[in-house]
Image (cartoon, rainbow over all chains, first blue to last red; front, side, top):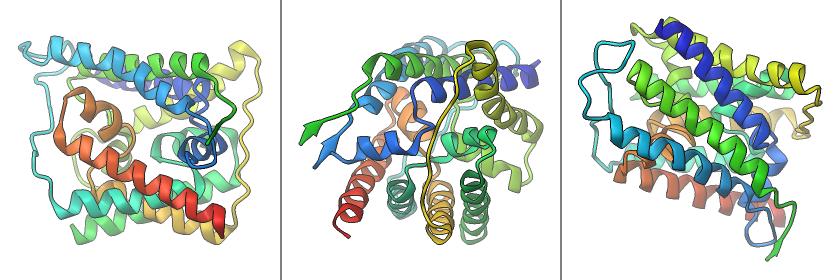
Length: 134
Length: 139
């Protein structure tokens, strides 16, 4: 059952990325362009998502178990370490260069766009390098 | 600063769907969504591989369903050079895996949990993204 849930949640997430236009790199770059012509829309994507996910998380986190799985798995790492900061700096720079982050990049593969394909392939190379050195 | 192309309603609607997906995945499967984590897990050995792979397939089916039911074309333009796509893609992959999260994992799931780690990560990649766009605009 949780495989079906995964597929459906992926579909909902993907449609959300399309409707919010996060799938469009120009929209993302417009959001990051706060010193010139700023498009604040993506702040509303985050607000919209957090309004739903935050109360749901806190309402359910202390329940015994999720509906289709034996236990909740919630990240426990609380350390603010070098990996977190250096990783986020690399990510922010790559994100600002093109305007694609992992979710929208993978979702945009649906449009059969060669640029998205190249970006996603390189992203997996990046994952691989990080896994190897971590 | 000028405000341009502001579309708060579609942004909020899309955001609700993203939040709904995160909420359902947590209530039903017990996990918090982080797309860089889900995607990069395909390269490691773990017992959630099929579940994760199906989530990514869902992401790709999403736009197709949207297009099928609403009949609206989805237009995006990426006009960057090949070399820039490769460098940026590799940086995004490397950075999100090293920093254990991206816009979804830290920016939505982590902030939902009030995780300080995720709040700091989100501020870091947002500020660096803003600086990068600012510098690209000068060059």
